[in-house]
Length: 137
Image (cartoon, rainbow, N blue to C red; front, top):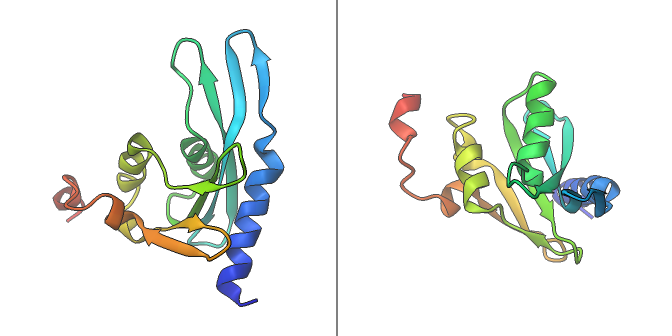
């Protein structure tokens, strides 16, 4: 197994470790989806989705990003989101936009699309012709 496969397996395992879908209260469910990201400094941060009755929750990706920012980082190298059935998926539209706004190089973030084949995509392929590019210049 090469280094690329190892890091994706490590990120996937980190996400699955915190996933644990659960009911927090009559108004909040958490952990249906989990995410893990690798920063450019080599650190891994995780998060789970938090779904609320008032719609003020957050996706797993944004939760992992909040964890990263809380710890003083803002540049992502790789990202994986794990669905309740164990499959991986690309971020929703809101997360794509949020991630693009993090850093001028966010378009180069590699996102895992298939754990078995290690198929990936760059964020800029999911958000072509992004409106905010010129603001980073």
